[in-house]
Length: 349
Image (cartoon, rainbow, N blue to C red; front, top):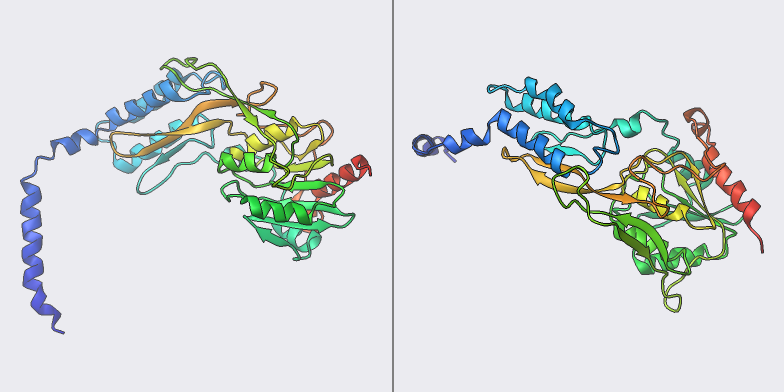
């Protein structure tokens, strides 16, 4: 094929496109990319809609004074993104993102400043011996001493009711159940209800949620209480009246944080490990004139006892345990070992 014969057509097309764009009034594009106007809009959006400014003791006006002088009329596109992202990092919130076609900002220090306390390879190789079942994103097996174990890495994996029936049927005769959610960054709140419904025999409170009603930092609706209902045990398998341990680390965030919050309120449940990473506000999405997306916490949630969950959930009393990398690499997980011993001490025929 002689590709050169297409060259005149290509050149003509490019000339037509160039002439077409030269005739378009692009003043609206200049208005869209106004660095100062975009910065101002972002600052105002957070000021009026972010839900934890007062709880975090953050003076948002002072943040404005810190970053506004950095934005000029000629601030370049990527520079503006960096300034805006740095301003959002002042919120210290993993739910806050600035989203463009070339980058997404993300505050990582909520977990990077803490020990990991987890190594999946150690669980798979040294405790499960690569012999485990897997469905709905959940890996599960019976540990020695007849203790059930489930590893659920993300609430983004939807839990099918039939899948959960099989999991609990296989683990049903165990002395207790370990639910390992370390490194679970959150996901779908519906999956919390599905899982919790198998672990309760009566309606329980899961805390409350409020919504923004105005631009003031404290303009919120009255709390709306969240409830969890038990499953229908005539149709589904439940796991009741046995000790349960939920394993946590700092990388448990958002929906995983909410799961820990409600589980901690149950009498037969121990939260074992490290304080979770928080993320107690439901995220909301907005958009800047430039077209960049903004995601931030807009609806605060509280635990069943009324506490703020944004800053994380502590382990149950006496159950804070850490798993140093030096031991994990040797095949020893102190958090899992502690949970096993606790279940054995609480189990009764």
